[in-house]
Image 1: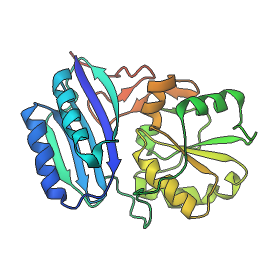
Image 2: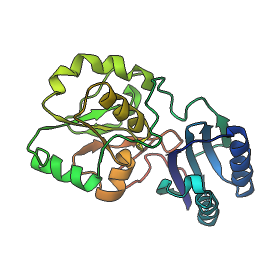
Image 3: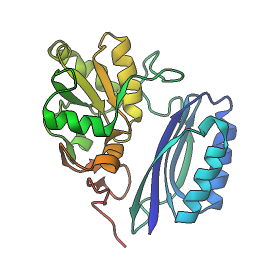
Length: 245
């Protein structure tokens, strides 16, 4: 059985090249495959391997004070979903290209999965405001599934979000808007930017869809969650759509 992890963490990285080299060496030594992105704003990683290797990698990562609080999402598959290990240095760990959108020291307010599940079931938030789920993912991802009734946008890449959202902003003024994505990283930037741009009624789903699946299952969600590897998509029980043993 293969263990798959997905994680990101925003923190100041003074020497991205040195950190990338260190993480590459550790992952290679542990025979892990996947993708690791390193930037001056933090790290974003998707890795898979044997239980003991993943445990060792996570332990070493959290031993670094910069990543002591990193939150990791786990799932399992019969087959290794990645062909090789790739470690890259990027300008951003998720490209958004908007000033003031990196959550270092400040992040947009969030809602926990259990609270959101309750809101969706009762049809409103705790202040009796209607709840609108805002999908910040692209059209390809949305085809595999999304929250029932979610506002989806004609997005091909994440940087398209501000323009695609513009026609809907006025109609969202009376709602509690919960932005969501696969694992939470896009909403860390999107929700912070939206609030700074005047949408103070926006929250982010803590942990994204995968965190929601982990904690409460598929309540209010239709279909699967697309993932960027050979598994293609995960259902609310975190079982892969494709898993050739």
